[in-house]
Image 1: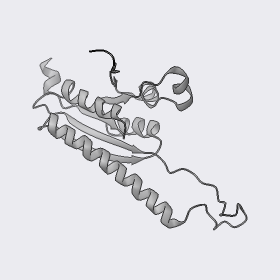
Image 2 (image 1 turned 180 degrees about the vertical axis):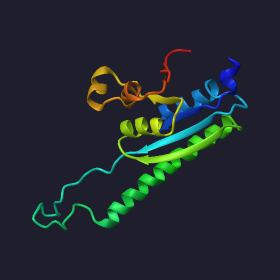
Image 3 (image 1 turned 90 degrees about the horizontal axis):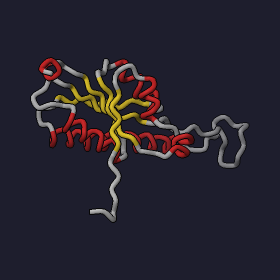
Length: 174
Protein backbone atom coordinates (compact mmCIF):
# COMPACT_ATOMS: atom_id res chain seq x y z
CA UNK A 1 0.00 0.00 0.00
CA UNK A 2 2.98 2.32 0.52
CA UNK A 3 3.75 2.08 -3.22
CA UNK A 4 0.36 3.59 -4.04
CA UNK A 5 0.93 6.58 -1.74
CA UNK A 6 4.43 7.18 -3.14
CA UNK A 7 3.62 6.87 -6.83
CA UNK A 8 2.63 9.86 -8.90
CA UNK A 9 -0.89 9.42 -10.22
CA UNK A 10 -2.70 11.54 -12.79
CA UNK A 11 -6.32 11.72 -11.68
CA UNK A 12 -8.66 13.14 -14.31
CA UNK A 13 -11.89 14.57 -12.91
CA UNK A 14 -14.64 15.55 -15.35
CA UNK A 15 -16.53 18.61 -14.09
CA UNK A 16 -19.59 20.43 -15.40
CA UNK A 17 -22.35 22.72 -14.13
CA UNK A 18 -24.16 19.92 -12.30
CA UNK A 19 -23.88 19.24 -8.61
CA UNK A 20 -23.18 15.58 -9.40
CA UNK A 21 -19.74 16.39 -10.79
CA UNK A 22 -18.90 18.62 -7.81
CA UNK A 23 -19.97 15.81 -5.48
CA UNK A 24 -17.68 13.44 -7.39
CA UNK A 25 -14.78 15.91 -7.07
CA UNK A 26 -15.42 16.32 -3.34
CA UNK A 27 -15.57 12.53 -2.87
CA UNK A 28 -12.37 12.12 -4.86
CA UNK A 29 -10.54 14.73 -2.75
CA UNK A 30 -11.64 13.01 0.46
CA UNK A 31 -11.19 9.37 -0.60
CA UNK A 32 -8.76 9.09 -3.52
CA UNK A 33 -6.22 11.89 -3.15
CA UNK A 34 -4.12 11.39 -0.06
CA UNK A 35 -2.56 14.12 2.06
CA UNK A 36 0.98 15.07 0.92
CA UNK A 37 0.69 12.83 -2.11
CA UNK A 38 2.38 13.40 -5.44
CA UNK A 39 -0.94 13.04 -7.25
CA UNK A 40 -1.88 15.52 -9.96
CA UNK A 41 -5.57 16.32 -10.17
CA UNK A 42 -6.64 17.35 -13.66
CA UNK A 43 -9.98 19.12 -13.81
CA UNK A 44 -11.56 18.78 -17.24
CA UNK A 45 -14.49 20.82 -18.50
CA UNK A 46 -15.85 19.70 -21.86
CA UNK A 47 -17.45 22.68 -23.56
CA UNK A 48 -20.31 21.30 -25.68
CA UNK A 49 -20.22 22.17 -29.35
CA UNK A 50 -22.29 25.09 -30.49
CA UNK A 51 -25.64 24.06 -31.93
CA UNK A 52 -25.67 23.87 -35.70
CA UNK A 53 -28.10 26.28 -37.26
CA UNK A 54 -29.40 26.16 -40.78
CA UNK A 55 -28.38 28.75 -43.34
CA UNK A 56 -31.84 30.28 -43.39
CA UNK A 57 -32.23 33.99 -43.10
CA UNK A 58 -35.03 35.62 -41.12
CA UNK A 59 -37.49 35.05 -43.98
CA UNK A 60 -36.81 31.34 -44.23
CA UNK A 61 -34.98 31.56 -47.57
CA UNK A 62 -31.98 29.32 -48.09
CA UNK A 63 -30.89 30.79 -51.45
CA UNK A 64 -28.69 33.47 -49.87
CA UNK A 65 -25.67 31.73 -48.24
CA UNK A 66 -24.85 34.86 -46.26
CA UNK A 67 -28.26 34.84 -44.56
CA UNK A 68 -27.69 33.00 -41.29
CA UNK A 69 -30.15 32.73 -38.45
CA UNK A 70 -27.86 34.61 -36.04
CA UNK A 71 -25.55 37.53 -36.57
CA UNK A 72 -21.85 37.33 -35.78
CA UNK A 73 -22.48 39.48 -32.67
CA UNK A 74 -24.93 36.95 -31.31
CA UNK A 75 -22.60 34.05 -32.10
CA UNK A 76 -19.74 35.90 -30.36
CA UNK A 77 -21.95 36.50 -27.31
CA UNK A 78 -22.88 32.80 -27.22
CA UNK A 79 -19.19 31.85 -27.41
CA UNK A 80 -18.32 34.27 -24.60
CA UNK A 81 -21.13 32.89 -22.46
CA UNK A 82 -19.79 29.34 -22.97
CA UNK A 83 -16.28 30.46 -22.00
CA UNK A 84 -17.64 32.27 -18.91
CA UNK A 85 -19.54 29.14 -17.80
CA UNK A 86 -16.38 27.03 -18.21
CA UNK A 87 -14.32 29.54 -16.21
CA UNK A 88 -16.94 29.67 -13.44
CA UNK A 89 -17.16 25.86 -13.17
CA UNK A 90 -13.37 25.49 -13.03
CA UNK A 91 -13.02 28.30 -10.48
CA UNK A 92 -15.57 26.58 -8.22
CA UNK A 93 -13.76 23.25 -8.64
CA UNK A 94 -10.34 24.80 -7.89
CA UNK A 95 -11.73 26.44 -4.75
CA UNK A 96 -13.07 23.08 -3.60
CA UNK A 97 -9.65 21.53 -4.19
CA UNK A 98 -7.97 24.26 -2.16
CA UNK A 99 -10.51 23.96 0.67
CA UNK A 100 -10.32 20.16 0.92
CA UNK A 101 -6.69 19.48 -0.10
CA UNK A 102 -4.44 22.53 0.22
CA UNK A 103 -1.36 20.65 -1.02
CA UNK A 104 -2.97 19.02 -4.03
CA UNK A 105 -1.38 19.77 -7.40
CA UNK A 106 -4.25 20.89 -9.62
CA UNK A 107 -4.38 21.52 -13.36
CA UNK A 108 -7.43 22.73 -15.27
CA UNK A 109 -8.37 22.22 -18.91
CA UNK A 110 -11.23 23.31 -21.12
CA UNK A 111 -11.74 21.31 -24.29
CA UNK A 112 -14.37 21.76 -26.99
CA UNK A 113 -16.60 18.96 -28.21
CA UNK A 114 -19.07 16.30 -27.20
CA UNK A 115 -18.31 15.50 -23.54
CA UNK A 116 -18.31 11.73 -24.26
CA UNK A 117 -15.61 12.05 -26.88
CA UNK A 118 -13.62 14.80 -25.16
CA UNK A 119 -13.36 12.94 -21.85
CA UNK A 120 -12.29 9.68 -23.53
CA UNK A 121 -9.73 11.46 -25.74
CA UNK A 122 -8.26 13.49 -22.88
CA UNK A 123 -8.00 10.47 -20.58
CA UNK A 124 -5.87 8.82 -23.25
CA UNK A 125 -3.92 11.92 -24.27
CA UNK A 126 -3.09 12.99 -20.72
CA UNK A 127 -2.16 9.48 -19.59
CA UNK A 128 -4.73 9.45 -16.80
CA UNK A 129 -4.28 6.72 -14.21
CA UNK A 130 -7.93 7.00 -13.19
CA UNK A 131 -10.98 8.91 -14.43
CA UNK A 132 -13.41 10.22 -11.81
CA UNK A 133 -16.84 11.43 -12.82
CA UNK A 134 -20.29 11.98 -11.41
CA UNK A 135 -23.48 10.28 -12.47
CA UNK A 136 -26.83 11.98 -12.92
CA UNK A 137 -28.51 8.71 -12.00
CA UNK A 138 -31.01 8.77 -14.86
CA UNK A 139 -33.57 5.99 -15.03
CA UNK A 140 -33.37 3.48 -17.87
CA UNK A 141 -35.73 5.26 -20.29
CA UNK A 142 -34.23 8.73 -19.79
CA UNK A 143 -30.71 7.30 -20.09
CA UNK A 144 -31.68 5.55 -23.34
CA UNK A 145 -32.83 8.84 -24.90
CA UNK A 146 -30.26 11.22 -23.44
CA UNK A 147 -27.36 8.81 -23.29
CA UNK A 148 -25.01 8.41 -20.38
CA UNK A 149 -21.64 10.13 -20.55
CA UNK A 150 -20.34 8.10 -17.61
CA UNK A 151 -21.46 4.80 -19.17
CA UNK A 152 -19.87 5.72 -22.51
CA UNK A 153 -16.59 6.62 -20.80
CA UNK A 154 -16.62 3.47 -18.66
CA UNK A 155 -16.94 1.40 -21.85
CA UNK A 156 -14.35 3.27 -23.92
CA UNK A 157 -11.60 4.62 -21.64
CA UNK A 158 -8.56 2.40 -21.10
CA UNK A 159 -7.85 3.53 -17.52
CA UNK A 160 -10.02 2.63 -14.51
CA UNK A 161 -13.18 4.74 -14.20
CA UNK A 162 -14.64 5.74 -10.85
CA UNK A 163 -18.28 6.81 -11.14
CA UNK A 164 -19.50 8.58 -8.01
CA UNK A 165 -23.25 8.68 -7.48
CA UNK A 166 -24.66 11.39 -5.29
CA UNK A 167 -26.75 9.83 -2.52
CA UNK A 168 -30.44 10.58 -2.78
CA UNK A 169 -31.81 12.51 0.15
CA UNK A 170 -35.17 11.59 1.61
CA UNK A 171 -37.03 14.68 2.80
CA UNK A 172 -39.23 12.67 5.13
CA UNK A 173 -36.48 10.67 6.87
CA UNK A 174 -34.33 11.81 9.77
